[in-house]
Structures are given as C-alpha cells and as structure tokens.
Amino acid sequence: MSGLTGRTVVRIIGFGFVGLILASCAAPGEEIEERRAPPTAVEESLVRAGKLSVPDLSDDLPRATLKEAVERSLAYYARLDPKKPVHFGKDRYTVRDMKAMLNQFLALLDEPLDGKAIKDAMRERFVAYRGGGRTKEVRFTGYYEPVLYGSRLPGLDYTVPIYRVPDDLIKADLGLFRESLKGTRIVGRYREGTLVPYYTRHEIDRLGLLNGRGYEIAWLQDPVDVFFLQIQGSGKVILPDRRVLHVHYAAGNGRPYRGIGNLLVGQGAIPAEDKSMWALKKYLKSNPSEQAGIMDYNESYVFFEVVPGGPLGSLGVRLTAGRSIAMDPDCYPRGALAYVETEVPVIGEDGRPVSWETVRRFVLVQDAGGAIRGPNRGDIFWGDDEDAGMQAGWMNRTGKIYLFAPKTR
Image (cartoon, rainbow, N blue to C red; front, side):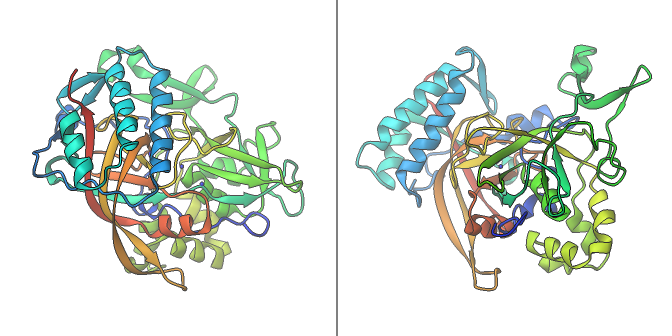
C-alpha cells in the first residue's frame, strides 16, 4: 500500500493523502524500484516491548470492523506457504504461527473484555513489539478511495484517459542477474534491442505517446482529479449508466516520485503552514495554465486495473476503513496485527481542522507504498466517503505503534 477510496462528472470527493504529497513520495501500492531499508534499520524497527510500555488496549471503532480486517489478513496468509518466515525485528516466526495467532485473537474478540482486561489477556497469549525504531514514534498520514464520474468512451465531457498496464512495459528483477542487486527492480521498455526507462508523465500526458493504442480503461474529465487518483492508488469510477468501475494500482512507470507540495511552497504559491491536499488541488484548479508544468514535475505515473469490489491493498485483500494501515514491508510484517495511538483531525465547516482528538485502535498491516518507507511512517486507510477524504487530507500526526506476535514459535 501501504495503507488505497462525486457529485458531478469526474469530481474527487475530499482532499486525500496529504502525507504522501508533503513527503514527496509515491502512492500506496506503487512498486519500490530501488530503495531498500538497511538491514540494521530493519532489525531495529521492532523490538520487544516491556510489559509496562504497552498501553491499555481500548478501541474506538466497532469490533465487527476489526474482525473483518483480521479475517482478510487470514485470507492473505492462507495463500502463502505455512513455513514461510515472518520477521519481527530480530525474531522469526512462520506464516503458520501468524495464522494461529490471528485465530486466537478472533476468539478473544468474542469474549466480553475491554481495555485493561484485553491488555492482560493479550499479554498472557501474545508477544508485543514496539515499532518506530530508535525514536519509538511513527508519523501517521492518511489515504482514501476517491469517487469519480467517467465514461468507457471519450467525449466532450470525458477527455482525460486512465490507462491499463501497457503491453511494452517491462519489469526487471536485477537480483536475478547479480546477487548484490537482490531486491532491486526496474521498469522500462525495449527500444532497438536495449532496455530504456519507461515514458515520463510529460511524455504520456502531454505528448500522448500512449494515445490510441487500446490501453484506455476509461476517460475522466479533469486532469487534476486524475493526478490525485494516481496518488491515492485506487478509486471508484461511476459510469453514465450508473455501473461502477473499481480501479486499482496495477503498475508504475518506474520513474521517481516527486511530490508537488514542497515545489509549490518553494515557489511561494502556497504558504508552508497550508500544505494540504485541499490547498494543492485548489491551487491547481485555480491556475489551469500552470497545471501541466506542476504535475509533470512528478514523473511517476500509475497504470490501473479493474478489480471487483475494491479497494485492494498490496496484500490483494480488501481494505477496511480505519483498520487497514500501510507500512514499509521491509520493516513491518505484512498482514500483522498492530495497535496505534495517535491523533486525528476534527474537521470544521470550512473543511479545515478545528482540533485534534486522540484515537486508540487495533489495525492490520495490509498495504504498502513508496512514501511509506522506514520504521517511522504509517498511512491509515480512511474509506471512500466525503468525511474520509477530509480526514485523510489533513491527517499528519505522530504516534505510537505496537505489533503482536505469537508466544510460541
């Protein structure tokens, strides 16, 4: 994933994913082509937590949504080899261990326990790990699934395409050629017998190098909305006959992601204290002559696929609003049960935060993303309604995270 979900034709609801824009990184689900966390950082990402450091495990969301999210992690583990290792810092478990633990946790949720009682039960049955590396803190941002209107055919109101993965896009795992490059992947295309970088955003959107080649999934109206759809990584496209296309990240062009937030602040276009998705979208839509140049600054481009019932995270399971979180898979085990303490914005009538309230809840690591790198970043999935877009757009707060593993290995 991470971490990725309208009212007139092609209008995105909400202000979405401020953290990724401001961090100058990539969308949930986007492949990491080169960067990998150093081994030492991975080992230090999670350390066993002392009994007194784990907070009372109260939860501010309905228990039914937690069960739903746990079952989706179990569905992910069911596809894996039971002997596959799962790393918690320096400790190693197996997929079989994780499945057994999550089933125990589901049984625990059926007991009439809350707060400290749950903490005591989990201390007895599971091992707690503190995340956040050396700082013991994680900066949490948010993402959501935008809702848009579009058409399967181009027209006067539908002029901006979203593409499936082009047939000439090639993914190469360099670790197959040299051990020292293990984990390094690149994306490109063949040109005269040579693998070269794939087209940039400018070449795709401005020069139209993919036009008319049959890769279009649908046409939308506003290039700004399509730009932010790529940042979110998934969305709902409502067609004229009211059918819904769930589009999800399928591949990237392999080009580096560069966020436009710092660019606009550096140019004096928006004040530093107002860096938010709302401000970025407002500036772009108010200055159409500058749109192309600003968006081309981010060379990264996302290709989509149509999936049933999305949104899907990087594990290939549906995300649960408020319960699914995107973390760096090099630092945090995929599918794992976690507990977060942080603050979320309370949005006023003007669409801006009027205060921040503390939340405490269980979440599942079910997504990943290029912006979510290292032990100190997390991205919470908020859902697909207008409130989700508002909260995701302003979410940018530090907090703590704990992960749970089985007591026996």
